Image 1 (cartoon, helix red, strand yellow):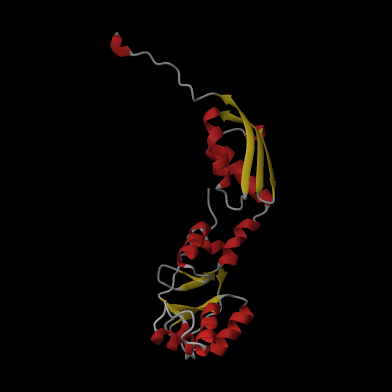
Image 2: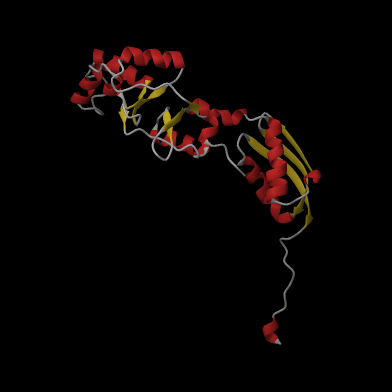
Length: 228
C-alpha cells in the first residue's frame, strides 16, 4: 500500500526570510502566515537555517534576564548573543533538519519528535526548497475520508494483499475506526488482517470478527520416503 508522503501534506511555496531579515519583520511573517517557523535562505537560495517563534520567545526572555533558568544549558556568550539578536540570522537554528518530498508522513513525525522541531524544510535532491511541513500538516492524515479508507481496505488489503473475496467481508468505517466481520479465505489470515488494516493512513483503530473457509494451518501429513 502507498502511505501518505510529505509532498502530499506540505505547505508549498512557504514564506521565507534571509539572515538579514529584522526580527520585527520575522515576527510579522510568523503571525501573518500563522506558522511556527520559516526557512532562512541564503542569497543563493540555500536553506541555511530555520527561525521559529520559540527562538523569538527566547530572545524576549534572555534580553531581560540573560542569567535566567538557561544558566545550566547555555553559556553566557550564547545567552548574550540571543539577548542582543537583531536579525533572523542571529537567532536561527543552523544545520536545520530537512526531509525529502517522498518521506512518509509517519517517518517525518518520528523525525520531528526525535529532534524536537516544529518546522521542517522539504528539499529536493539538490537542496532546493520545495516547501515546509509542521505538526499540523502531518495531522491531515487523520482527516482522510472514511469512504477512502474503506476503498483502500477492499482494493489494497482484501483483494491486492490477501487475494480474498471482499464480498464476504462487511466493512464499516466511522471516524477512522474500522469494524470488520465476515469470512476470509484462509485461517492463516486471521491474526494478520487487523494489524495490516491498522497500518493504513488515517485508521485510528481496527476491530473485527472473522470466520475462514480453509484451515491452511494444518499441513497434510507427508510420508517419510527414506524408509522405502
